[in-house]
Image (cartoon, rainbow, N blue to C red; front, side, top):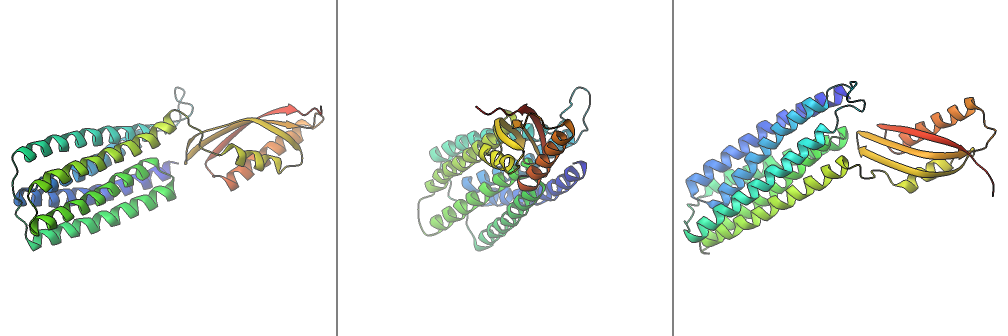
Length: 289
């Protein structure tokens, strides 16, 4: 697990550098072009970098070993970091709306040139690569913080395409007010990203079921010695799953065979569901009615 956190930390550092580069380019373009939607997009990109920093802090605490006060470890710090990212996005969205209102009252025509458009396209390409890389690593490492952060970056791509469309429309003769209107759309994307990240991480923190109960039931019933199964529960994240259940077996099954049965059941669950599973089984005698 410690090795996985090291890999996650390395990915976050790489993404942080890429996000800061993209944010700096967009912010510089926004100031030069006097584009509110571009500046809003830049702020969104800066929050990508800030979320990477929050992720690094979360991973630092999550990687701490088990101790007497935390017998289940510190892994949920990763989800807490994800919640912070969600709150950050919410605040950024509100700020974008406030700035959009100001520009709606006092519109400024953006200064649009081909080099600026090309630089914006370059930042979009970087974000596409970053989002795909981060999501792939998040799925491979079962890292909730990387998956959450990739959702954040993916929304940045959509926002950038919106800004690009806005600049092209203004270049074709539409009024500058459209720049502020699009900034509201950008805020909507930011709010949606905040909601998705909040939903994913909060579901883990409140112990929402993570594995289909019927799937566990079918695995258990594949053993002849298991006659029935009930009170099946699951919780956790993809890299830290906990499953407990009540299993009914023949009353005369020895302790040794019962232990072997539980061990084989756990191995099969690990094979078919996830290697990062901890299984607790409560054995009960099966009685025919």
